[in-house]
Length: 291
Length: 220
Image (cartoon, rainbow over all chains, first blue to last red; front, side, top):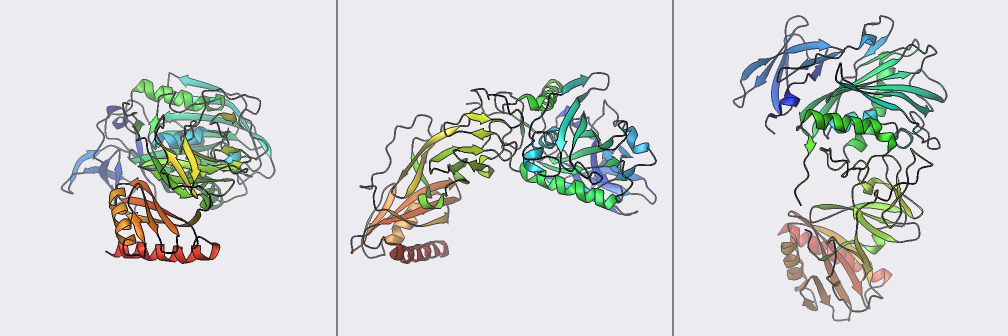
């Protein structure tokens, strides 16, 4: 595809690489929102990002930020900054990057899958869910207008093995946070200390409307396991989700609530779709053919 | 609007009890599923909840359940259970899209029209037909029908060309080829037989000949 003209999508910060992916002096070609770009790592830790024109030459230079183990850029003029996630600054946490995973679907299907608890008992059997404990208890959703984010709070779900650090089943408490159409995270309470939550993010790089790379930086409270163990656990979970994500039809997200029918457990997805509709984003959205 | 037309989509014997299977007809994805008791259903391959393909679902008794969230659908299409809310009676609006389906001549047929009026192709009595073999040919359905009829014309017997191409063999065996338009570049051809050669043993010989037919057509 050619680069999207959708100003809403263009004005967001978008992950496009992970720290350590590119050697100093080397460059890496990729794509955001249909726009080919080249990321060049300078001698130190600095990066330069430029659009690649149809002639293959570097064109317009794009803004760069590095944070949460990722490299971010934008094609437009972002109205919101990168989100603040304080957990990544706490020195006693394990921060894990995980690289990226390719998923052939629209970015919003990825966000919704991440927000969804009802699939745990079917897709993540014996880890995040149990086949005999499928109920999703009521939770609240909020549109936090000061930061323009969607939150789902007071979420709980029974989990046989909630993380690498947990042995045995428990009711896990979650909070979900959608920071942009292309970034989502959760706070998950699994430690003894009820004030210390694992922070797990998904930053999505839409290559095109239906092809994405997902980055999963995490800031975890865990004194026993290595970063590699934690990454293994998370990737095994994510690969189970990928099978689902690549088999949803259409891949683009329908916003019409009569086309895909939600139930109470989908309150976060309902809030997310309303929010997307209100911001009038077009990139990656399913427009039903006129009958 | 899908055409009011019956297309064979599988050999009846290929669709096992308690299974859900993906089938494409005219670029449209169908979940062809059979309940534990043997009832066959042809539904849009899309869960009304979050678009998951129902051909990846699992059958439990007389219900098809979506693999993503375990929603259970009865053969009338109605959602009967939502595991996230065990005490909730699902609203009537949550209903899978069903299509007309028939079992005849050892084949499963579907018609995607909203209000099907067309009759199934008439091959005479329904009894005695046995499954031979399904093959897939490169190219659209017209091309495939012409190629199959052309090849069968070289066999011993009499060919009748129509929606279903049949070959009347000298020993009285009838071989029938029913066509499944998959998309512009692919056509399924489902072969069934009736008569003296349509035995458990004879079936294998016919299947081998059908594979040779496919090789001749594809190598042309």
